[in-house]
Amino acid sequence: MSVKKKVPRIDYNQHFDSRAYLKFFEVEPSMHGFLPFVLRHLNNTFSSGNLKGKKLIDLGSGPTIHIIISASKYFEEIVASDLTSGSRREIEKWLKKEEDCFNWRPFIEFVCEMEGRSSRSPEEVEQRLRQIVQVLKCDVTLENPFHPLPMEPADCITCSLCLEEACEDEEEYDRAIGSIAALLKPGGSLVLTDILNQSCGVMGEQTFGCLALTQSQVEETLKGHGFSIKEFDTQPATEFEKKYIDGDPFFYLVAQKTE
View 1 (cartoon, one colour):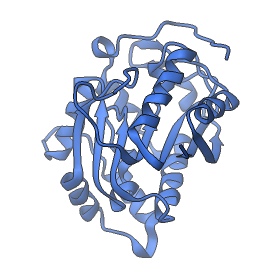
View 2 (cartoon, rainbow, N blue to C red; view 1 turned 120 degrees about the vertical axis):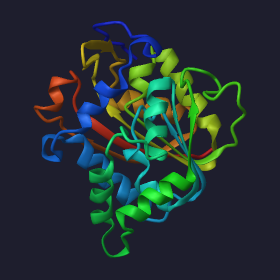
View 3 (tube, one colour; view 1 turned 60 degrees about the horizontal axis):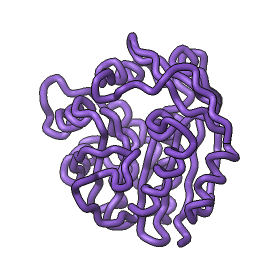
View 4 (cartoon, helix red, strand yellow; view 1 turned 45 degrees about the horizontal axis):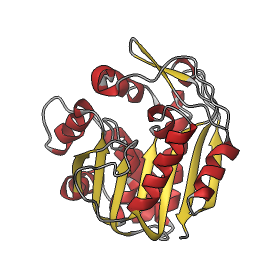
């Protein structure tokens, strides 16, 4: 696979600004292509009843919880995880209802509206998340992303806007997918969202490099680690989103571990 990078990968422990990242989530939903796109897909994926079980792991959560809102109805426990202490702290602040935590209520209300007749109230969703979510440190470039902690294989793994930002090259991306496969039970599912053809992004004052991949490159890597692609959909970036990224389009993928 060819690799296109304009700037080097940043040291996320040193330079990732969780609060600056969260500003991306503060604007009107109409300015986003990605957020409504991924939230609708997540609702459809989990409400189908095909993806459920004991444990879901969200790898590279950043300082966010929007990816696990729909899933919280279908799993007994959820692990939110990130490399940086600042991101983990932002999630913990929300779980503990601390005064300066980020306001995720608009996203929860959006999901509740999509759930329709079977909808939980926003308060019920918040209570559920605070009951079942634990926050752990992870590094997706390690063979065991939760080293030194052992991790029981999960029924489902979600991973959003993480791998192409964390992996330096094709080989590291391949190893990361292999590590994800090892964290899944046989027959378990991976829900992966990211950006195709992205070589760099902007966050606050920081420009960071990304691993630019095509759809076929992503699919072939997954197939090489025993995944069967069940769904692959794309969404063009809006003009607002193009201020932050140079890639296009966003993608949403569901794959099942077959080996």
